[in-house]
Image (tube, rainbow, N blue to C red; front, side, top):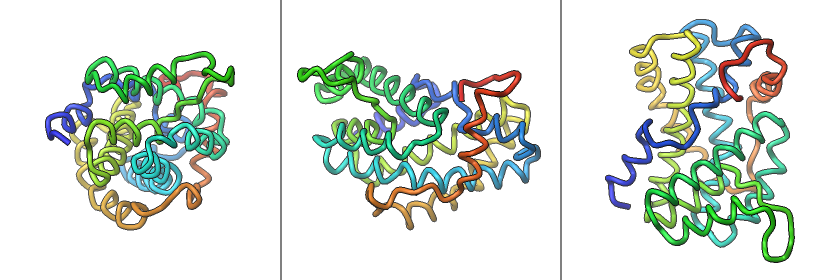
Length: 227
């Protein structure tokens, strides 16, 4: 993959809609979690391990077999039992594809975006969910990334999302958020070592309490984020 394309997608200015979501952090804050820098560290670590075990297997599988992306999308939908996380994944997946199609003009990515935005397919089946993990893997494969680059970028954006949400929620300032990302570089390495070879059959939530708290987001009295 051309390194400039990789850096462009990694840039926080790349408009994928991810900053509208807190990765469950806002709900966790209302439940008394991650109220301090130390609590945020714990939350980030637990969230990233959830991403590594529950989402990264679908990224990897779709990268290896882009033609199977919509079958993997169905399986990803079945694993996202929290309606809040499910909705966020669908929204971010469609936005990521739409943005990538407009910017890179890669025919395979354009086709993915067109399918994700259609009401029904040629067989009059319901439209696809377009969850972020499988479409991310398929799109990065089409753009010429390596598997390692794709997995690294997916995990990096997950960490960056938590750090950004923490700043806007007032938990930490911008500099401490950057220190959070620096500290958890080792966490991302550990996750890659343990999860890079996992497939969809291995997908699992390893910190279910975070999912339970995140599912309460819609019931918060006041909300800054969509999820």
